[in-house]
Image 1 (cartoon, helix red, strand yellow):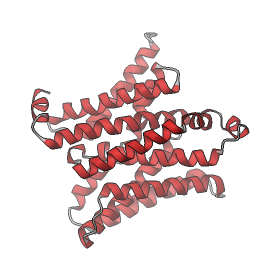
Image 2: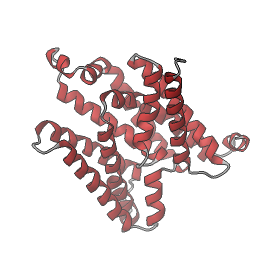
Image 3: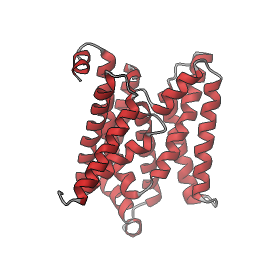
Image 4: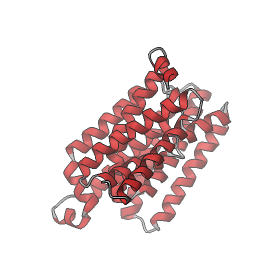
Amino acid sequence: MGQFLRDLQTYSFLQYALLAGLLTSISCGIIGSYVTVRRITYIAGAIAHCTLGGMGAARFLQKEYGFDVTPLQGAVVAALLAACIIALVKYYGSQREDTVLSAIYSIGMAIGIFFISRTGGYNEDLMSYLFGDILMVSQKDLLLIGALDLIVVSVVFIFYNKLISVCFDEEFARISGIRVELFELLLLLLIALTVVLLVQVVGIVMVVAMLTLPCAAAGLLVKRLWHMMVVSILLCLFCTTGGLAISYQPDFPAGATIILMAGLVYFVAIALKKFGKI
């Protein structure tokens, strides 16, 4: 821990990583709360795995053709596209939703692996995409993460009450004149952007865990949604900062350590709830 604190004052890559953890914690805590109460983690998982297609394609275009595009930008496009497809299928498709989600999940992964296999450094790139590498966050990535974070927070602030209505009582929302389909699409797009933020921190495989575990823990500690969001943000920040600090000196995988911290937080919250401390 002491080594981490000393190096944090010297190395910009550690400062970028810490700032990335802070920014992603804000969106993760807010949108993760919606995902948890709405019980749509399976949709978040499908979107997360689809991002590999966009990241792989962006990497391929960057390396092979010199396009000025980063994997994180490719992930944004893939995630938003996946969210739109899921919304269209849910409201206008005749196929089973779970079948379509499985198809999106599988095809997105396959496209990503195909493109990554056609570029140099296949194994290294695949591992960093799947399991994250927060220490490799660049200044350009940090600016994009900050912009996405600002979009997510602004949209939730503006449409907070409508999103609550859609999440907790869809029928009442319809009767009240709220365009449920529109706001469900908006929620899916916000989930997509949050997934992109988390992919850089914990990787594609562990996005769902980070999106749900701190929020589920917060749900055990408080009752109101906005309280849940605040506590979730604090718990996400604790997990990302703590995981980064603990993993640094022994050279543990940062993404995996962050998820282990989130799991620990969740089980501690369960224990506190069970034994009547809260």
